[in-house]
Image (cartoon, rainbow, N blue to C red; front, side, top):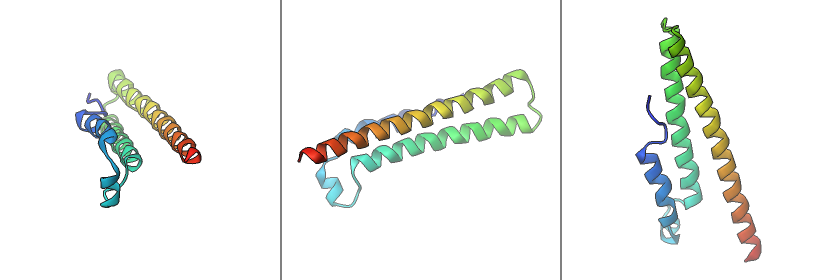
Length: 102
């Protein structure tokens, strides 16, 4: 079982705070876009985990451990999707508040 939020995803998320206006002006996007992209990649990775485990089950892997693993991966996806929504929503509300104060 592989953790869907791997070191590359964490590295991408960690680097978001270092992106400044120069990156935005050069067309590389802004940190909010990078934040969403990092979440998208993490969710894609988890979706691949679910697909792989579903393939095992559909090819006769009907052991309780196989089915439990598929359930676990699906529940992890649900948790990650809720977390991504919550974090993106929180950041967008903070940006909106900052925009009103300027």
